[in-house]
Amino acid sequence: MASLMDRYPGIDDLERRASKRIPFFAWEYLASGTGDESSVRRNRTSLTDIVLRQEFLKGMLKPNTETTLFGRTYASPIGIAPVGMTGLIWPGADTALAKAAADRNIPHTLSTVATTAPEVIGPLTQGNGWFQLYPPRDPEMRADILGRVRDSGYETLVVTADIPAPSRRERQRKAQIRVPPSIGPTLVAQAAIHPAWAMGTVRNGLPRFKMLEKYVDRATMRQTAGFVGASLGGTLSWDYMSQVRDLWDGPLVIKGILDPADAQRCVDIGMDGVQISNHGGRQLEAALGAAEALPAVVDQVGGKIKVLFDSGIRGGADVARAMALGADFVFCGRAFMFGLGALGDAGAGHAFDVLHDGLVNVMHQTGCASLDELPSRLVPTTPSVA
Image 1 (cartoon, helix red, strand yellow):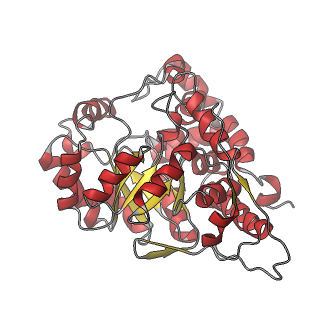
Image 2 (spheres, helix red, strand yellow; image 1 turned 90 degrees about the vertical axis):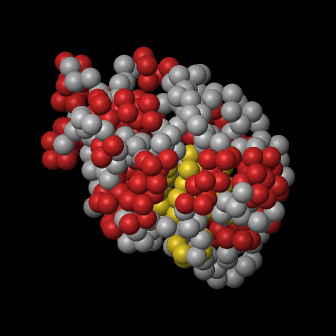
C-alpha cells in the first residue's frame, strides 16, 4: 500500500484533496485573498523567481535542520502560522495543530480568533506554543489576555500589525461568507455533501471564539463576532507596542512588517523579532510580495533581531529560498490547513513532513550541510512583479 508521502508528496496535492473535503464557504474563507488576488500571486512569483546555485562533490552529506530561536531548539526552521476561525475550516484544527507541533518539535502559533482557548491548547504544545495577539483596545482586557496566555505556558508573543482595518475580500463576499456563518439551506447543503467535515463538526460543536467569550455579556457566536469587530485592532501604534513590551517579559515579535524603516523601529523599541508577511495576500492586493520585502529588512536590522517569514510557502524549496534571502525561520498557515482538510488530524504532521523533506532535499541538491550555508547559494536575481 502506498505511503502518505507517495500519495501526497506535495502541498499542492494536499490542497487539491482538501478543496474536495471542505465545504465551499469554509474553503473560500481559507483560500481567498483580496481584490484581484494579485498579492497572492506575487507571493508565489517572488519566491519561485529565486534561484539557488548548486555545489557538488561534497561527499556524504547529512543536512542539519535544527534551529535555535529565542532560546529553544526546534527540529526544523518551519513553524505553524496563526490562522483565524480554524474550527470553521476544519473541525478540531487547533488541537490537531498543537499536537503536531509537539510531535514534530516545531512552533505552533495560536490566533486570538482561533476557535479553542489557550488554556486548552497551550499544554498540548509541550512548550512549543506561541500566541498571536490582535491588539485589544481596552488596556484591562489586554492585560488579562496576556496573563491568561502566560499562565497557559506560552513564552513567545506575536502581535499582528498588518490589519489596520478589515480588507474587502471580494471573493469571500461573493461566497456570502459571514462570521458567524448564517445557517440556512445553502450552508446545510454544502456541509451535507462533505461528510467528514460535517461529522467532525458534530463531534466538536459549531466553531466559537473561545478565547474571547469571557469578555462578552452573552457569549453567542454572533455576539462574540460583533465584539471582535468593536474591540480588537484599529489602534495599534508604536506607543501601544512599547506598552506591550513593558507587559510581556518573553520574546516579542511584530508580524506584518514589509518596510525597512518599520523594521528599524522594531529594533529601536526592543522587539525580539519581525515577521515579514503580507497576511497571505488577504489585506492589500497592491502589497509587495513577502519575498520581495525580505532582503531589505534583513539588511536593515543587521542581525540585531530575528527575521521571520511567511506568505506564499508551498514547499521545502520555498523554505530554502526564504532562508537563502536571510530569514531565520519560516512559518506557513494555509499549507498546514490544507493538510488537515486533506487527511484529518494526521494531515498537519504530514504537511510538515512534506515541507521538511523538501528542505532537506534542497540542501542535498545544493551541497549544504547546514542552514547557514543557504545564503551563499543565492543567485542574485530581480524578482518579477505579477
